[in-house]
Image (cartoon, rainbow, N blue to C red; front, side):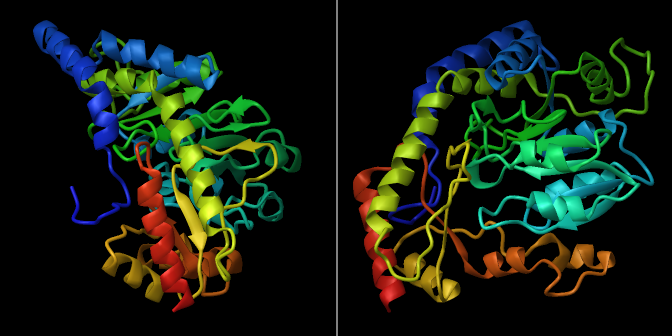
Length: 369
């Protein structure tokens, strides 16, 4: 998959544990020719809803569609404003625009999570929803946001990087009115391609979601709403069913690896380790540190065979596609500063202590010059 001695991501350890179950599941789908919305989709939806602690889960084609569908099912549309963190993957922002709403950005805090006070300062009479992005593996403070926004404002979670994480004992996916997730292959719970889901405790919203993902209807040729085609593939549901049974164990491995990194790197001058927001149970989708001279350090790590990443190199407002928002450099200073300093280190189920020591040694050498 990569020539790095320690790759940023390695999925082979997980794949070996689920290959037999997936092969058997694929054979069943092929034998039954149940390729679209087959019974395995419903099985996964029920299992995922139970896992998240919500009543309903609706499988969709990908995580971007999941966010857009969550917005549409919440009644968000043209003329409405949706508040989103400036430091997020572009899909979160793009889904707002695809739903026809106006995008409003807010800065993050030192945890890289959307700042509740920033959200409160951006509420207007047009605000219809806030998307809390659970970045890097821990939930945003949805409870604090709820206390600061009017009751009619929908709280939507982007759970793509925090599958299995908890806040005050409640799992991500059950902290807001509606939640969306991606099952992109590299996620804590990843498919073998694009896939996603929307989670909610509202049967009314769930019914609308089932129509929206299926051309606006639940009965063939009866179209009650303006929907589109975004259905979870049955083969991907097989993969997700097999992996879900192992997710907690894999997350525990991520947490253990993060703890080891913190021990190995705790005395390294100039490096800032991940901060866990009080009340959160982090699942470390990514292990993100802040380092001085980030680009030079990354280059040295890459030269040493260490895979690294930047999540993300530019806040949304500084991307060319979002220049129309009219924000200049300095508009969201915490997000901008973080984008210049952050680097993601290798962390995944199956990473060995020896590999982590290689990363640590290389990072010590790079930072100390």
